[in-house]
Length: 442
Picture 1 (spheres, rainbow, N blue to C red):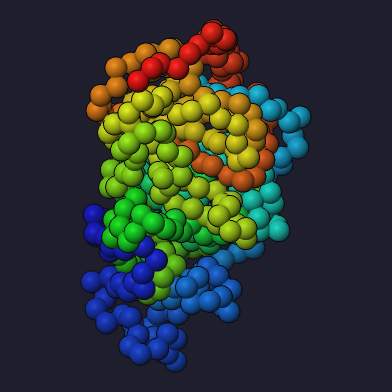
Picture 2 (cartoon, one colour):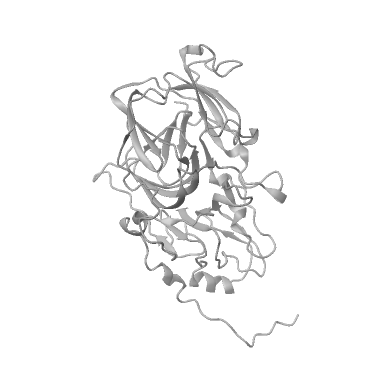
């Protein structure tokens, strides 16, 4: 199975062949008249042919049967997966969700696809510009079924339960505190090992990149060598009862049948691949003198828009680190932002809020005020400042977007997880204004 074997690097030109078929990669060309072992050559393009080399993404797959051999696609139920951003009226309030419920396997079998629920989003997959945020809650593995997203890339953040992802490129085991990216058009299947939950950031029209480091220099934050790409693995399996391919296309789901496993790629090469990353490997940059630095210093991956410095979406984490800033209010500052901020919690306790639980979420929309709750403010306004560990045993994250995201009906109502008392965490903030205050003499 080659599970646990990966290739290191971000966006590299990789080449891999299943060791059961040595020499299965053609030498010196991409599509010979006859491929080794009688395989079919198939290119998967993740960018326009004429993109500059720095952004040109494609891989060549050498497979037992080509993916074109299938019955016609037909519409299927989308469940709670949607791209309809006008289901309900806009809500500019601070929103927080309690942990999303995972269905019990004894009550209902739910796999990764049927367990997808759209929380919020904006834009349009047809025009190739936008974002969607989903939760997945499931309890059973996908059997003789795979998924492909023709609309965009999935950045998957497991929160409870490891997931085994089989792709056309090989297998990845992804655990909580790791992430993976399945790029547009890549077929994959998800095996789970119990009650499983996580978050998904979907972007239309762009791929995730490492953020530029600027004056930080050549090293730091998420280092390219820590990203892992699976090695080739194939199965030559006929499925007489039918194998289902589910395709997300223009915000809707379609399915088709074929009589063989799509994971029949014996060898492949290219730079358009799935990959995973362990968040513990993030090299944290932080303030060592005074003030609270902006959270952009914690960016793991970014999907850039056409405007310089403005992202369709950033994936930002808040990992364990040292807090050493002098004469500074160290938790996050009070804020109104021209960006939307969706936060989740993988494990632990978020430093700025009580009541924010693993498996839950919050959304602070564009220009909606947010910041530390009253207990956090009072405690940290009077704390003795000394070097201390921050967020030990915790991993919170943020999907930040330049889009003004709309919340779905499922997110506001159907899920029944919205914490309608969230606003009360700021209600007891006191007026500390003293018109007679004088600066202390030095």
